[in-house]
Image (cartoon, rainbow, N blue to C red; front, top):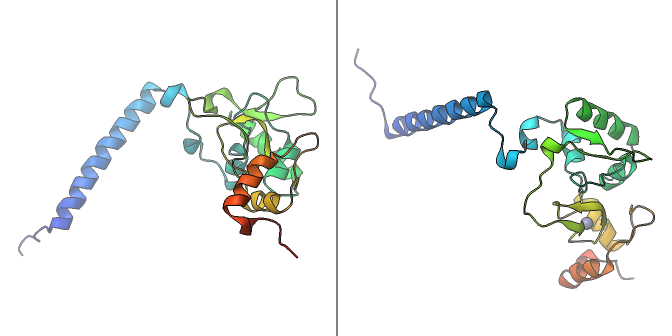
Length: 186
Ligand SMILES: [Zn+2]
């Protein structure tokens, strides 16, 4: 019996695990110390959300003071199952991720304070691509669902909440850069 010689890739692997374990140790210490994340906010990435929950928390305007109604979230996600959206919002509330906007009737929801990504990132009132009017200024730049955003380029007003206006200048700019996205000419 003679010892198996370690190859360069074994060394690399050993280095990797050493780095990994020191990072894991640091994380454990931070968790124990309750060290807040960047700017004292909890990252949503670590909230371990289901796929629909993830879509909901990423809906533009969920990070805004004004919040978003379940109906608008449903429309933004280009879905037709508002009851599921409401159920998911309540489940998220129980986990402390979302909360009802106080005093809003009909109800609106937004992220609970620990998850709001206040930062110096610019806020947007409209989708930078189709001009969809967000519920409130948001760090999100685009519509939650690309196919719905595409459709708003072809069909202005598609699932845009009543009383709000799609920014047609933004839409025109996008179409000027890429006419193929626009209405199909007869
Ligand atoms: Zn859009």
